[in-house]
Image 1 (cartoon, rainbow, N blue to C red):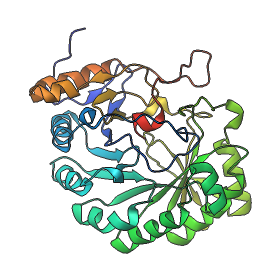
Image 2 (image 1 turned 90 degrees about the vertical axis):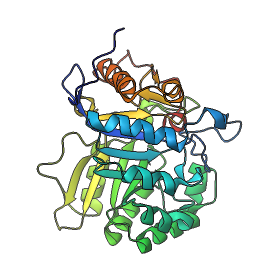
Image 3 (image 1 turned 45 degrees about the vertical axis):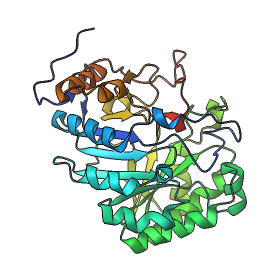
Length: 338
């Protein structure tokens, strides 16, 4: 396959006309909780540390990608706060001309310790994974009794100066129905935005079943009935993964990531870099492109950019979760990056 020209600063446009400006970077596959829909409880085989990209390699990749139109970064894991000296990387990435937005996805177990350092490094947005405010149910989902640490971490983030925080809630039918409304009220009281995410087939144990998906429509009905009427946000960004609603009483916003019931593939603007240096054009991609060897062989920025363009050129129309053609990716979520 010939590589597309990389000398131009033309946008990253795939064959379906989608423009890509959003790069999600996993900094580790390690995690300190064991959510049943993501990881097995025991026997997880994490990557050797030598396989993981260094911070310098990540920065080099981002600097090569920015001239192609990348302006937004999201740091993920695993649990990114397990990566030592993460504020150093954030400071370096925030200083790259052209980066307009950077966020971090975390389970917040370690956030109390790190919130102030993250903010000082230049981070301004957090997405916090929290499925329940019930301690027993939290332990059932994560197999860890860490809810008090998570709540303390959220408080520390607020104290450090973080605003407009989003809470990511994975909606598994038959489990989280009691949590939908309490989490919405918790967010309304604090000015957070809950993001309810339909359960996706990305677990390491093949537990996913279509019947276990609590759909966005079901949750919208519940919140509208028990918290307050919702209306679609006018002029919302069509490329955002979440469909946003706002309370009619002005009490904040709610997002729904309906990857199963209402896939948003046609508007996707994201590419992903795994912690071991594989470039993926979709969370559900079967194939991926190695860039770690390029970075470690002192390849030029043009060579790296050409590989990025080639990866985007191969991007499919969508993941086809709702068809017989769907094949789950060979990596689980924690290995790909959230």
